[in-house]
Image 1 (cartoon, rainbow, N blue to C red):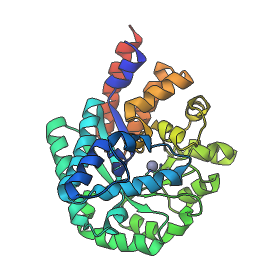
Image 2: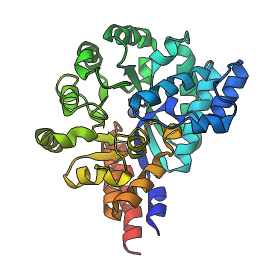
Image 3: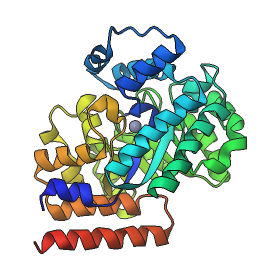
Image 4: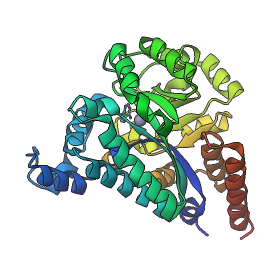
Length: 339
Ligand code: ADE
Ligand code: ZN
């Protein structure tokens, strides 16, 4: 069995995935046509060719513009359904999916429209594939905290469908401390918390996410390498990092996959996981992210297994579900190891 086959066969969890970042050029084209929207591209190939980014902001500008083709309940269903079909193909048995309500509310689309599209697809995937899906409601950090508070208020009737809250969008200039009050409220309501930090932002943003927002996981976090005390803290408390290798390459966080620090972080004893972030914009879903680091960084089968186990233990799944999946991972890995 090759490492590529092992990547495919291991049951995996994905913990850092923006549903708006799974919009394919084909679906964008089709929905633009359906709603009579004129895109600034002549064809699907031109959309694909526009996916060249120099930093996070250059990507976000295009990503928010692309999301404008999502208008009705069916569009949100199609978007989620297409991603969950991909999960089924890639042996992703559990996924924790971020969505950005403010992107849609600000365009006049009501909360119930995207939530019912998402939950219809999630229920269908549960029935047909046995995949479990948790939703993470993410606040946009380039907007004021008052807008996040207002969003939390609007989301109230739907909170039984939400497992956790997150923080994403333009990192530089928008530290986690800007959102301390809203995340205090979220914590009081009993939700898990994640936040993007240390993607482009400095280690101090990761400290703020830990100490002020009291996050359960850090999204990205790759700049922790610059601060030894932070590395020690992340290791001691086994705070998971949801690392996204192809995203880091496409957004020029690293200049070459061979320079990526994910293997080094794993070898330091940090709880790192592999994820796809915005797969249709960055050139690969989850298995392609594993494949990219295995090829560039000479990751062993045992390290690959550790990354996959980390994805399960870093998830918000109940303990008994985690144990069941890890037993399966160990069985598949043993079959590989004795070959
Ligand atoms: N929203 C979607 N992808 C993101 C990323 N990589 N960083 C911050 N916000 C995002
Ligand atoms: Zn992200």
